Amino acid sequence: MHEECGKCNAIGGLREEPATLVFIAESELLRQKLKKQLEDLSYEFYDEEDSITLQVSGLKSFFYRFYEAKGLSEIESQDIWLVVLSPGERFRSYHVKNARNLNFWLSQVACDEYMEILREKRLMVYFHPIVDSNLSVVGFECLIRGINQKGSQVSPAYLFECAEKTDSLFYLDRACREIAIQKSAERGLRETLIFINFVPTSIYNPETCLQTTIRLVNTYNLRHENIVFEVVESHQVRDIKHLRNIMDY
Image (cartoon, rainbow, N blue to C red; front, side):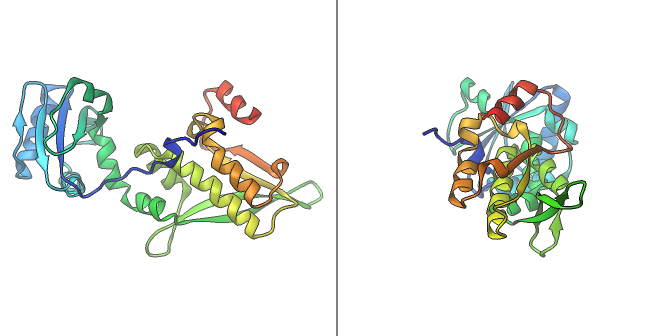
């Protein structure tokens, strides 16, 4: 049995916990702008030659304040790198491999509604009938929508845009496949084709990333031959070999 994919099970998100933050700017201009914003927000920091370090009592609160200040553009934030360490942990050169650009962290705030939907699994499915030339229903396409705290629908375009920004595409795509299979079974769609959209780049290795999907198909006694995976219309496939590998599996 293959192990499940770690990225498919990781949501991420910000936690309200103390941390040591190490910023590395790609230019002196960005470095000065970063320092000014930290000063404007009344944060004390240690200014070294290659990095800026500060301690925060709450990681989530820090990024919310930083985001609301809007002192840096999205493009500028992409060129400032950040390493998050445990309180008191010293920065070492090998920590650089775990660095994320500042825009990634600020996206956790900008996409807060999306992250909440993902954590609470507030996804729903619409079943769009697929008909043949005789207007007979041959299957159903599963259309995913998110539901926010107010009960309003959230478009898949917003969900997948935030998934890209927050590096949670693996998790979202898996969650969409699973809710589609679950709701199809609950509606008794065992004798018809079920079309499920997916993003090929969200499946790193089909032998691991599709384990939960296959398990659910078996759990709900759905026929494997009736499950049709369909590449999402908005996604441009660049790696045809990878796509074929998924479909062959």
